[in-house]
Image 1 (cartoon, rainbow, N blue to C red):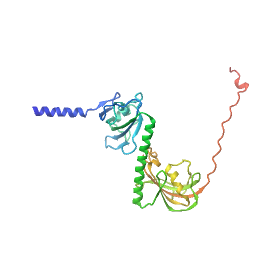
Image 2 (cartoon, rainbow, N blue to C red):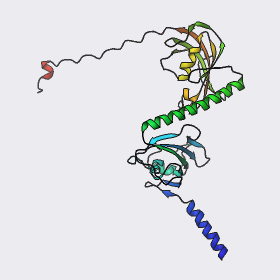
Image 3 (cartoon, rainbow, N blue to C red):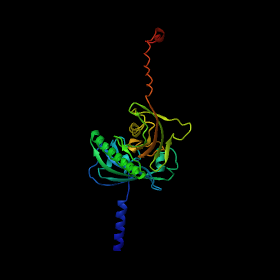
Image 4 (tube, one colour):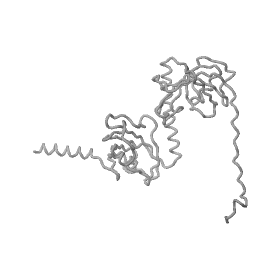
Length: 310
């Protein structure tokens, strides 16, 4: 009997350790404490966040391998059935796990309809690591800049390894894009800032998947870019300055000089490094921008317009 009592006590202890609490709107969560000091309302919180689909643990969102999330804690704006309800119960160093019911999300209108991702009866698993807290925006800005630089340097290192493996000889732009010149072209007609470069290109990812191209496509016109006008991704804006009329080469673009954390629709995923085959067909002076039309001066009211009005 004594041995059975010990076993039951241990089972009860383990059950209590694994027991989830619930937020006011019913979100189950568990906090592994790393601090006795709670976050304060108004503080800026730095944390890692991950969402996974419970069925096969496929990632929906994950900051652990890239730039952490930052937000200002506002206890008046915690939302419903959200991890934001949990943050005021946390301190720096705390680790949180939580689960979200797809059915509950649908009943609350957060998911319009079931689909291939959010299926009836499905579960989303989440976790949070609270990394730091800051009392003003200046500190947050400096920390975020450090995280951006850290991410970009990691991407540049990956592209340098890719270039080395493929035998691509590159030079680096001031911000970190890599450029290979294969055919020099006419550098007296260089794509300097303010010049218009007429470009044929093919864009693909490190695994060779092409996402866009106007090369070898009959009827597809070249793409005109005014260098320095910030009308294209920063990796292009800097990389094209190494090209002249007739130059052929490559621009290897770290994600943070491309489409960064957002990606580009469903075509380019967040934090994706990009490679472009480039041929500059021509370099010209762009046409002057169309003159801005000044708004018409207000018309003075006539007697007829003001008749009957006081």
